[in-house]
Image (cartoon, rainbow, N blue to C red; front, side):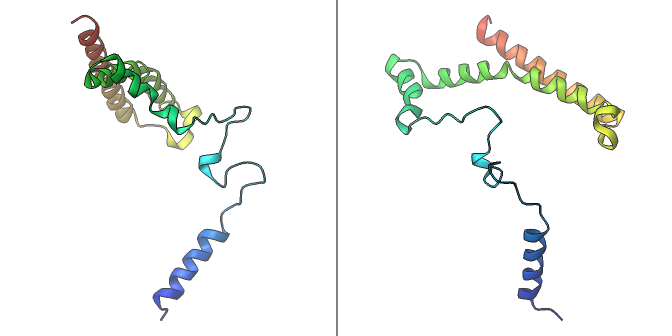
Length: 129
């Protein structure tokens, strides 16, 4: 019978030696340092991270309203993410065996439509209503 230590040592050896190691200079060893080719990571000093929030306070805007408005602006991107995901995952030539079942695709279309409609309602409420 193996003790708990020997079993965990075996698991450690399997997980550390069976994985392919990243090549030199890929940045893949540390996901935080990984970069897209041709793009540099922009690092902002700590002092600059708080300036937008401090500017909102200095101007005298309601922080809660500013937060809601920022989320409304971010919500413009929701359809641009949801629609391609639903479209791509229903095509067998793109997904192979991982293609969505037609029932799953129908549910995803309904969920995406609901999210997009709720987003449109939020935009209408914030802008005009």
